Structures are given as structure tokens and as C-alpha cells.
Amino acid sequence: MTRHLTAGRETAPSRPGHEPPRKDPGRPRRGWPTSVSGVLARLLVAGLLGGIGILAASPLAAARSWTGLAVVAVATAAALFVYLSPRRPAAKYLIPTTFLILAFQIFPVVYTMSLAVTNFGDGHLGGKQDAITAIETASVQRTPGSAEFRLTVAERDGELVFLLADPARGLLYAGDGTGLRKLAPSDVTLGPDGRVAAAEGHEVLTVAQAAARTGEITELTVPVPGGAIRSQGLSRAYQGTAALRYEKSCDCVEGDGVVYRADPEQGRFTAADGTALPQGWKVTVGTDNLTSALTDPRVRGDVLGVFGWNVFFAVGVVVLTAALGIAVALALHHPAMRAVRLYRTLIILPYAMPAFAMLLVWRDMFNTDFGLINWLLDTRVDWLGTPSTARASVLLAQLWLGFPYMFLVATGALQAIPSDVQEAAQVDGAGPWQRFRHVTLPLLLLSLAPLLVSSLAFNFNNFNGIFLITSGGPFPADDPAVGATDLLITYTYRMAFGQQGAQYGLAAAMSIYVYLIVAVLSIVSFRRTRAFKEVDR
Image 1 (cartoon, helix red, strand yellow):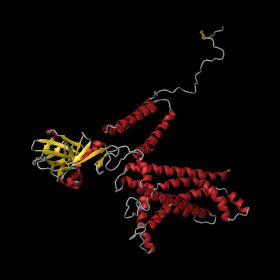
Image 2: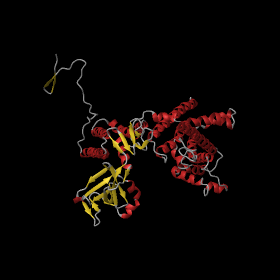
Image 3: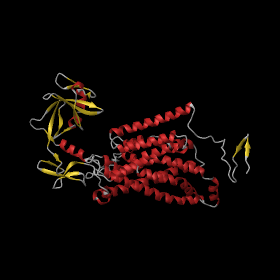
């Protein structure tokens, strides 16, 4: 066995087929930064991420949302681990995108689906205890001998608060929608009339400020055992007795000789004759909201009518804007055309202006009394008052706003078509129409097809295009819930935030249907547009 001598030292013999590992001098080993700037940069990143985490966690902790707090803690810890580690360079770029997708894509979809299986809406906004409190406080009536208070209206953290002085017992209180709490005399300053003049942590409203919020003050009730405290003017308050009271033994609400028993499936208190109290609580209803659009005759009729117009509107806007955009692009592409740059500048002006403002301008132009269109035509047509003219109006407005985009894309696609292709077709004897139909149009559609699909999906949910001009109207006298120009998205919005009452669960179910319809239309359209790829082969 041979041994190697290096600088007078004996080294172990190397085994056949095995060489000792060598260090690559060109690849320095990654480690923690030792320079001052590197350490400061990491401290800055850690402080920034920690601050964002604390800002996000504070309201969640105050609301006792432990699940949300856990999510924020895990996300903050993951971000600190990735950005403070000397390795994982790819994760440093991926983690912001991942957080944004989770926050603005995944979470809204999951939250919408969770609402769709509940009865969340007007009268079902909170839990069962919230419903009991609302029922009892809404039925409060003043009785002879009820307690009276001297009232001062104040504000705390933006919310109205009743500062109450009970001269009979010498007690001071602060009450809001959550209940009543005692105030220490050392924290309160009383005025000469016995009312609270100042209280620590509260901002007392002036007479003018309180008068401006009379409606809010009248509606505010402070729940107390057996009733609630309500205002009587701006300087007096009384403790009333609830006409309806919850009995835990029977899980029911009793009052006026009627018993309303809890119905856990509907989330409300129901009497034997089927009548129910308006205040209920949020419960899971399964697929009831999803099936009501198909089984409820009224909802099904509205949805089918809206869906038909929705498809016609989306397809009509895409066809009209594409046809006009291509036609104008072809006209300006002709060699004999002069002042092309001026014309192109004028044509793209609608596309350069804010669509929000332009839609409001179009709404005023369609006004019957002082609108520009009636003034130019010397007519008094109620453009937005009848279904046919209202639909034509929104199509015209979308044509004016949308065709410049198609014009720009078509212009670029025309300039990309080789001139020798057109010359070869002309040499073969093809006329202008034949060259357009068999050469120009297929090559244009090769570039326009994906944009037409995206335009179809956009106009299917074009909320602003409808809501800012017609608000979905005109509405029939017997059904103010659905209008002649309503799209599914505006119909869903009115279902959730309209004057007929908020039905968030049903609106969430409708949103799922809208998503599925748009997804199916997009998939089918993309499959159909693959045929244009044969032009390149």
C-alpha cells in the first residue's frame, strides 16, 4: 500500500474510483450577510414584515377572530423565514404573488361559496343571541313608573353613546348597542342641570351635532335585562319593558299571548300559524339558494329573462365593436388614404377617456328633456324609459366606447400581414371581396380571436356599462326587482344591495352561476378559435 507525502505529512491513500470532494472556487457558499448594509437591509425587511403582520393582526384580535389571527401569524412567519434566509431565492419572488392570489382570488371565491350555503341577509345577519336581543329591544314599550335618565349624547370611536345620569340613585352610565356599563364618578363631569357635561374617552356632541343625527339617536337602543333604554328627545331617556321576551326553557319568544318557537333550519322564531318574527339568525341552508334559481318560479322567470338579454348584449357588443373596428382599420389602411395619423388620433379618443365619466355623459345625452340626442334630432323620445330604446341606448354607448380598442388591434394585425400574400391572391384573380374573405379576415381573426373571447367575458359582466346609464331599468310596475337592461351581474347586485332587501346568500349563489356561465362560454369560445390556427400551417 502506498502513501502520499505532502509537505512532510502523511495522507491517507485514495481508494480506487473515489476522489475527495473539491471546493468550487467560483461558487461562494451562501451565508448570512456580514456587511453593515446587508444586516441593516435584513433588519429593515424584518421590521416591515413584522409591522404589516401586527397591523393585520390587531383588528382580528380585537374581534376575537382566532382563525384569521392564526392565518396572519403563519403568513408572517413564512414571509420572515423566506426573506431572512440566505437561500431560497425563487421563493422570495413567488411569495408576494402567492399572497396576492390567496387574498384577492382564492379567499373571495371561498367566502362567496360559504355565503351561498347560508341564509345570510336582512334579518339573518348575526347569531341567535343577536336575534334575541334585537327582538326584545325592538318590542320595548314605556310603562308607568319606568326608570328615567338625564341624557347626554356623545361619541366614542365613531359610534353614538348615551351618557346617562340617574339622579334618583346617583349612578352614571354609558350605553350603546352592546349594552350598559357604569362610569366612575371621577371620570365624569356633571353640568348644572345634572346631565353629563364631559366623560373621559367620550366626545360630547353639541346641540347642533345631536340635532343633525336625530334619526340615529332615535333608533339607538341600549339593551338591558328585561328591556332596553331609549331616548326621549335629546335630553331625556327612559328604560322600557320588552313586550316580547325569550324563554330559555322552551327556546321560544313569548308575548301578546303568542309563542314563537325557534326553527333551527330556517334560523327564525315561528308561531303555530306560520308567522315569523322579522329578526332571525344565520344558519346553513345547504343547496337551497342554489336550487331556488331553478325551482322558485319567480326567481327562475327573472333569471331566464335576464340571461337571454345578457347573452344578446355581450355578443352584440363584441360583434358590433369588432365589425366597426375592422371596417375603420381597413379604410385607414388603404394606400390612397390621406391624413391617416389625424384620423387615428381622433378615433382612439373615446378609448383614452375614462369610461366611468363617459358613461355618465351618455346617460345625460339620452335625457328626454335636455339630452343632446333629442336636441339634435328635434324629438322627445324617452330613450331610457322603454325597454327597446333603453337596450339600443346601452348598445350604442358600448359601441362608441369599445370600437377604438378593436380598431387599434386590427390596425396592428393588418400591418403584420405580408403584402406578398395579398399580391399573390390578386395575381390569382381574386377580387377585393374574395381577398378580404379568404386572406385578410382569417389572418385578422388569428390575432383577434383571443381578444374577442376576453371581450365577450368582459361584456357578459359589464356592470358599469349598464348600471351607470340605466341602473338596469326601466322596471315594470309589478316587478321592481328586475329591469329590462339588467345583466346577471346587476341583477345579483340589486339582490344583495337593493331596496327590496339584502339577500346575500342568494346573491352569492347567483354569483356562482355567473362564474360558471362565463367559464363555459370562455372555454367553448377558446376551443372554437383554435380553428384559426390552421391559417399558420
